[in-house]
Image 1 (cartoon, rainbow over the protein chains, first blue to last red):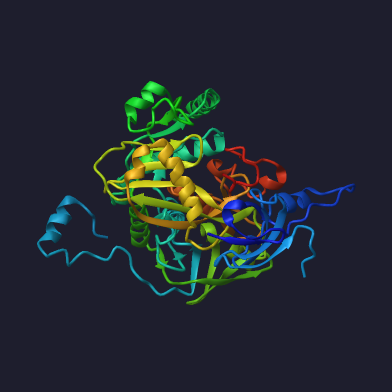
Image 2 (tube, chains in turn purple, red):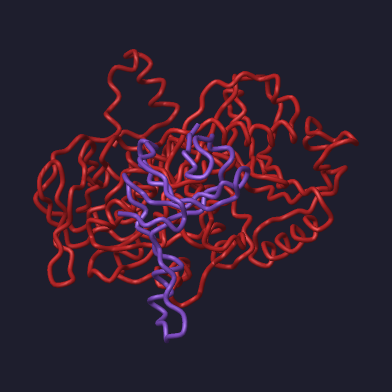
Length: 89
Length: 418
């Protein structure tokens, strides 16, 4: 069982959350010409690292906020959690 | 190579089975190979076998970080099927079914292929319509499919929950009678033994640490047993694909996720088929030892841990009990996990890459075992001829940027969502 520290609610079990995938992908800017390659990068290509991974989780059975979680994909250690709009150093 | 037969079995019985030849050697790597296959799982071993058998390329090495057959080929639920709707997947898998039927003879190794049939249960009228469409698509591609009504399903699997007051009543199902199971370890060992006998070097406990690429061409691989030159290199590493891709500065439409499976204590023969739950993600068959072999959802977040988490297992088995209430009386014998190369449309990639001489075989999601022979056969063709075969022409890497996705399940890019 993962225990995720929701920045809004505190420490909660994984059962309350839904996973939202890689949080580092950025949608291409609006209102400009976007190449197929840029869309490809955004929609399909993923680093999927072994080790530290910044990812989105949705506290769907809690405060319903989206949060960012920095987690190790091989040990499941959670290093830090952030609010969705929080700056990440 | 010593041929396995009833006569060799009897002969060796007289010497207490002490004089069997080793099934494959343990060679030290040569300086250079024509082809290096990275990954000694089912797909890598099959690729090496078909390179030797179909293309007469025998100066081949398989490099395996652990031991052969220790990854997903030894961790799956052994299901073999070709019940796909899309042409690319259906024709590819049905070609594989032919190879499965001949495999034990072809490899002189009993892979215990058991075409016991797979039944996908339907729990609504809409689902019956969808299965009817899928079944018709399958039949157009020459794959056997039978739509069963509730009574017909009940005759085949009377132990399922057919009571009146259930959340997901069984309306019927779609059956592929020629689908089935095989002994997964035997597949790896059979391919390894034959590949070895034709001159392929199987190098175990040898980790790839880097690649030698110059002017857009592959020159060799760096390993924990030294640098090895190669004219061509094929990647067959499933869930570890992204780790190697990073060494090559490639970003792929692949995420690595964890899938669990489990077996119960053995019980007397009860379940003749492979059965899948239609209102969730659960599948079940009975092994020759009598264990109920079960699997279902991915754990649902990127993972390289090869070890599962309890909430998913609990969820999967809840579905199992909804389908087969008797499962609640059984004790679990083992659970385990393997890491899956989840592609962004749920279909695999067998293709050349932008690096000359580097070939890619990945994206099998949780359906890699059944594809073992067809994947090896087409990947060997792609490597040997430096072009894709008609059978894997849909499995190109560029289909994501060109929009030619093979979205069998209609799940979009988040193929790990259950």
